[in-house]
Structure formats: structure tokens, C-alpha cells
Image 1 (cartoon, rainbow, N blue to C red):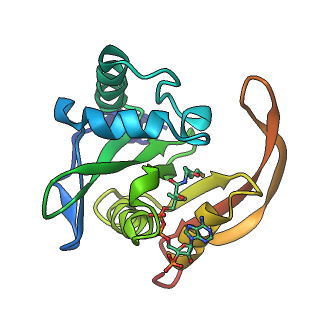
Image 2: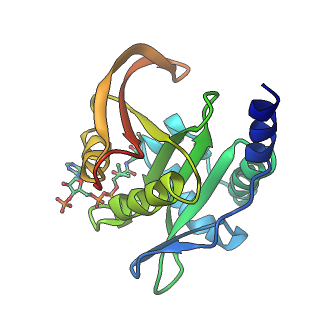
Length: 193
Ligand SMILES: CC(C)(COP(=O)(O)OP(=O)(O)OC[C@H]1O[C@@H](n2cnc3c(N)ncnc32)[C@H](O)[C@@H]1OP(=O)(O)O)[C@@H](O)C(=O)NCCC(=O)NCCS
């Protein structure tokens, strides 16, 4: 029992990994200079719904969003990182790995600004974050919750070896509506994506 508590305390003392990269994109901590990325995300119909990206963008609201991402680390909730083009360091998206209450389980979430979609960036970021999470991050399972009509998100997960486990009905509360979610997961013993 003590060992479990100790392990939990160690897990909540989080630090950022060294930037992850594959030659095309990098996954790194958010910077205040990434505001244009937050502004573009706020204009997307889906992103502000399921995240804390401001619906009405102002520089102050954007900076508060970036501060919230760092707070997720310092409060021990997980890692919330920017996705950037490796050549220019321009931020074009977001990916996070958040601790679930179950030991060794994390949830993954992500978005890419509309202008940078269909360039392989989302799937690359999921590949980097998943490899880190199941490797150095020491998680046994990474799971994703996806709305049934979000085929793009389902596709990028499947490309990365995530398996569909089932549907949780009326699981998420979006304020004005409740949504079913499909549960996807990758565990350490799954084949490479
Ligand atoms: C889901 C999302 C992150 C995908 O990011 P992306 O960088 O555009 O994805 P990729 O370029 O890596 O796509 C890889 C493949 O997935 C499939 N795919 C991606 N977007 C698709 C779409 N809109 N429709 C159909 N297939 C799609 C394609 O097969 C694509 O390969 P191709 O472009 O060579 O055909 C992005 O659409 C997004 O940010 N959506 C809004 C936020 C969101 O839904 N986040 C997830 C919540 S669970």
C-alpha cells in the first residue's frame, strides 16, 4: 500500500521531457510567442468545444490558455505540449497526455490548426507522444476518447496502432449537449503502429 502511494507521489512530480522530434515536427513546451497558433485554434468550430482554447480570442485569453498548459504540469495533471514545425519552430497544434485516476494509465488529446491539417502532423505528433508515454513515460496504457463522428481523429489513432474498445454512451458533457465517445487504447504489448 505504502509503495503504491509513494509511486503516485513520484508520478505527480512531473517535469517536461526533452523536446520530442522526428525531423519534421517537434513536440515541446508552449511559449508565449505561440499566440498565433492559439488564435487560429479559437476560430475552429470543434477545438474550443472540447478544450479550454478561448472561443473569443484576445491576446490576454491566449496567454491565459498557454499559462494553463504549464499549470497542468506543475499541478501534476499531465503534460500539455505544443506541436511545432521543426524547421521554423512555428506552433501548429497541441497534444497532451493526462494522468487518469488508474495507476499507469494516461489519456491522450490533440488538435491541429485548420491550415496545417492533412500534412501528417497530427499522426506524427501522436506517434511521438505515444512512444514517449509507453517508453520513458512509463505508462502501461494510453487511451483516447473520440466522438463517433470524428473520423479524422479515429483515423490518426488507428494509423498509430490504437485499438477500438467500444462506446461509452452519453459520456462527455459539452455544456449544451452530452456526447457518446469511442474508446481507443494502446498498451505496451500492442504491436507498433
Ligand atoms: C484529428 C486531427 C488532429 C488530425 O490531424 P491532421 O494533422 O490533419 O492529420 P494527418 O494529416 O496526420 O492525417 C493522417 C490521415 O488521417 C486521415 N484524415 C485526417 N483528417 C481527415 C479528415 N478530415 N477526413 C478524412 N480522413 C482524414 C487521412 O487518412 C490522413 O492521411 P492523408 O491526408 O494522407 O489522406 C485534426 O483533424 C484536428 O485537429 N481536428 C479537430 C480537433 C480534434 O478533433 N481533435 C481530436 C479530438 S478526439
